[in-house]
Length: 442
Image (cartoon, rainbow, N blue to C red; front, side, top):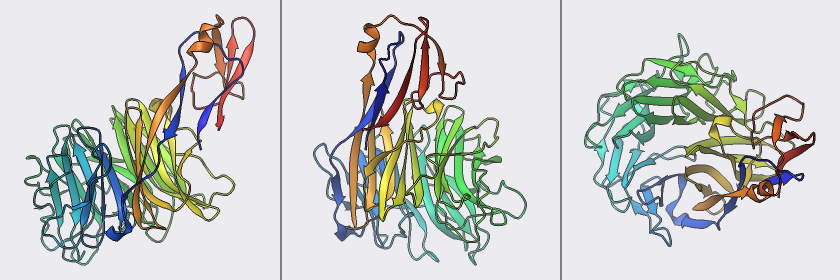
């Protein structure tokens, strides 16, 4: 499904362009023999995709070599046993050609958390380094990103020795993954008596000295998504904010968490909530410096035929952003994606279907005009990948054929607004004419 601009003899004097996504053929990354779950994707220093996933024994990694994906390698070294589920498990992150992987050793009751490092773009990995030196406490659910210098910063869910008192902690490295600092608590900002949602994944984002941990909270079974905020690069977390505010009350763990990106002083979050009775994808845009949460918005809202939405991932680059998620309806589970061509204006409610059926637990990364999506084909048990290219549909030729000047822009209800290519608009010209523009499905 693609979207393009519909015009009624539109001509304006300023340069405006619109885009659509052209999807290349689907590529199989790994066959079902690898028992694939929870794929994640990053780009290496050559902007080639590096894809990871796990099974009960290994963290697997495969890299695009320019023509195909390499034969998957096991990156967990001598550690035999990797904790994995459909929506949680090992992850990777990148800083140029340095790739870090993180995994939790099995069994969960006694296994440790380890980080592995590749300095050749994901082709080979160094031996594992333990992260969670926490005595008799227990750990689960691992995540990893890098700071601006390329040092890895990790998070995991820490429990007391009886699996009580779940809280999110962060442990960073100052020597590029050779050792890790003692973990510091990053959660606990919603009020007295709160804990975290004990089986929901989290996410990390780091820019400069700002380090953020996004997690699903649990305050008397109100399970909003919260942000722990560090202003010293992850050494300490001193405040937090609610970026969800849907007030979803659920007595059991929903096993789904948020995804975040930082742009300047703005935090963009994507997550699922079923506060309305239907599992829907939401996003929010909040100021980090003010540490003031903001009410989230439904991305598409409910529409006819929708059963549920879940497992969103967000990626932002060069002023553009995408959110990819899993969507169910009419007996199919799809991977779909929303593209924002100007992230400051938020995300449109329209979406593109990346994979029409049998796809689950997607992940996404974008760079420039390229979108890279990976997912698990649950009918085949395979990992699959697809690349999308954002291609502009310019209005330059139309503009050159007209000298009319726009004097006012309104939405369809007549309210005067700024130009936003993601919404239907009416343009008013100085000669007294007006025209409507909108984007429709192909």
